[in-house]
Image (cartoon, rainbow, N blue to C red; front, side, top):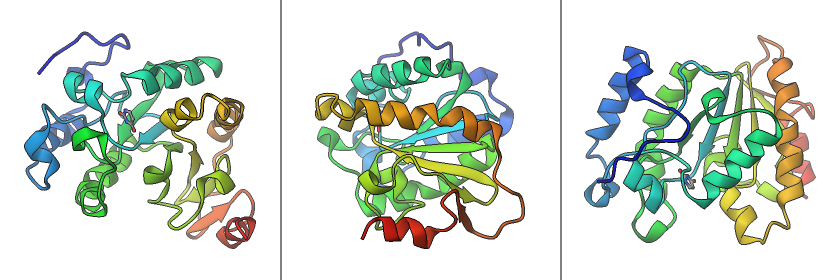
Amino acid sequence: MVMVENHFNFNKEDLPPSARNLYKEISDCPNCELARERSQTVPGSGPVPCNLMLIGEAPGKNEDEQGLPFVGRSGKLLDQLLADIKLTRSDVYITNVVKCRPPENRDPTPTEVATCGDFLSRQIELVNPRVIVTLGKFAMARWFSGMTISKIRGQAINESGRWVMPVFHPAYVLRTRLTNLPLIQADFARIESLLQTPPSVGTVGVEAEISNITEIENLQK
Ligand code: URA
């Protein structure tokens, strides 16, 4: 296990006890296949609570070595996207759908995603963000099951009083040779106004900016 000083000054000791307890539980988790091959778990980074939460897919090699999310190439792009909107890592809470590296960076299986799902629910409760940005299709699927990311990216829904907005995964943007960079930049540019305009409280279930989920589904047809 390589422990490296992180450039964004995240220190687990600064977290409230509730979050530290959850991190400990995650680090001891034996509940799926991924526990066998990990060097360490990657629970998340950033302050708790926090207004903005970003959720990715799964740790890769660098994350598995350092115990921190998004520290490889995708992380560099993420840092740049945040810098473009005048945010740093210290302003955001970042985690993944699964907390352990899938071997060879394969996709996490539905069982692995489901097994880790309770940890993610508890993190969302503790972080209590105003805005959740899902990075890529695995995080998106928790709220937008069966939908196509290229059709709904950049559109926020109200989920129990907080905005949830899907965007492309930074690794996808890199894989597509940055042709999608302007789209992810445009989506990130929306974050500030979402942070400043909480969705109306008391609305039931999914109240989208574009009025409701049926309209989002119609966009796909
Ligand atoms: N690093 C992460 O922590 N998560 C991803 O989804 C990709 C890279």
